[in-house]
Structure formats: C-alpha cells, structure tokens
Length: 346
Image 1 (spheres, rainbow, N blue to C red):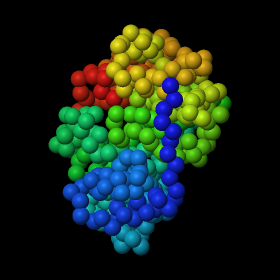
Image 2 (image 1 turned 180 degrees about the vertical axis):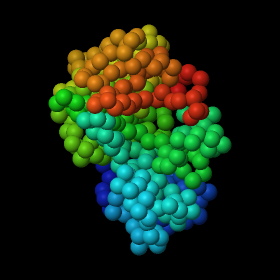
Image 3 (image 1 turned 90 degrees about the vertical axis):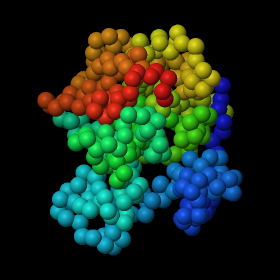
Image 4 (image 1 turned 135 degrees about the vertical axis):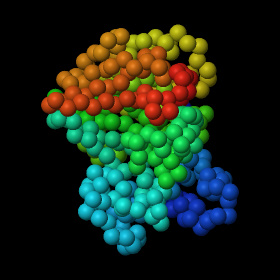
C-alpha cells in the first residue's frame, strides 16, 4: 500500500523555522520543546523535520561539516588539529570546552571515508538521530560505561559522554560493482518512532555526491530487516512505493528472511515490510542467501553470520591488499553496552 505523500516545504519556511529556534533561546524547557512549538505554529509535519533543518543549518554555517572557522572559534588550530580536520574529525584541541562544541563541532554529518587496501568506503549520512536514541537502543551504555571504553571517543560521543547516533549507508566499489550496505529509514514513511516518521532528507543527493547514482548501484547488502536499514530500498512515486535501486540485487540472509516470514508482525512492522521490503521482493530483485557459514558475494566482500540483534543478522567483511574492515550493522561489541538479544528493538 502507498504511504503518505512526502510534504515539500519552501526554503523560506525552512529558514523561518531555523530562525525561530535560534530566537527562542531558553524560553522553552528543552530544544526539542522549542522545535515542537515551532512545528505547531508553522504547520510543519513533525518536530523531527524542524530538528533536521536546524542541524543542517548548523553544518552549513561553516566551510565544511564538523570543523571550526578560526574567526568564529577564536582559537588557533594546531598542526595535529589540521591533520584531524583532514580526516574529518574535530580539529581543535580544546573541543570539550569550546564555545562551538555540540552538534556543529561534533556532528555526525562529518564526512568520513576509509581506505581498505584498494577499496575506498564512503559513509553517507541520512540523518542525525536524537540524543535519546542511544539510551533507547543501548540502555546499558551509560556515560560511566562509555567513559571506560578507551576507543570510543569523538565524534561518536558528545561532551556529556552520551552516544551520538545517525542513520547512514556505506558505499564502495569493488571490481566494477557499486555496492551499498544498508538503506536507512527513507523519506515520507509512516513510522511510530517520531525520529523516523515522514522524513524529508537529501540522502540520494548525498549518495550521488559520493559518486553513487541510484541507477548505477549494483548490489545492496542488508545486514538485517529492521526499519532503519531498509527504508531507501523504495521511494514513493505517484503514490506507489517503487524500488529506488532498480538495477541492483538486494541481498539478505535467508535465516533473517525466514524468521520474519514466520513471525506474526505487529502493525508498525507490517507497514515497514509493505512499503520497504515487499516491493523489492515483488520486483524480483531480492535474493536470500545461506549465511550459516560466511559467504562471498563479491571479490573480497563476505557476509559473516552475526546473529543476536536479529536471528539472521549479518556483518559485512571487506578484504583488500592484506587489509580488513567490518561493517557491523547493529552488531555491537560487549564493551559498548550490548543489550540482550531483542529482535523487536528497532
């Protein structure tokens, strides 16, 4: 069934909403409360839409996402900071006390790429998630627990030792094949979670900026069938959910597919399957593969079974020129506060 038509808002309305949030100051109990009020006053669908506009405006306020402008920060950046900036990390040595700290300095929109042998992996942001998402997804990841994990630092943790989370896709090319890992939340979809409901992002433009046009994608690897990993498998065209990457094979573990096929789905999850998964199945571009043992799906690209978060969850292993990387989906290491298996969590 088709979902709601994605609303389109004028640039003037976006600018007005962002300006009103800036002028609200401390007149509300929280920034979210201010966003909710502005959304109500201006007839904007959800506070989450306003939040996205504000975060994007914060990123656009400087030359490149996640970095300082010396004239604004007022503090000279060291040579080490310059190296961090080139790597897409916060450049200033005093970031925890910097007046520019927060979403602008530490934003998850910071562009990141990794080189693994001959393979360059692009992280393509869909949307930053509200701060409370971390506590919901990983309830044991308290600030104290996070502080004890030496490798878990900026830009993934804020100054209050709380997780920064985002919905994102990873894109890379191997042997002439353009490959994506996971497909985010999607635009204009009816969702119970307000942070995911009726989004309006420029994800496809960002994906194209990274060099991946939707028609050119050859393979979409889905780590598991949860709402925030399959959304962009489809997009609404004329009131119908159509495939976004129509020339790509979409691959998911057979155990994952069979688990959900045999499960009585609650309405929200049924909605997700109807608008994001069933269309790619009906188009004949969904493949289920046996991942009881690791399976190679492209040169150097292996699906590794990692059940727990869901019964058929798969991790993506990437090998090139003696180097190895893993894209873990929602498989979290125990030191990060891994919860007990919870198949219905997200």
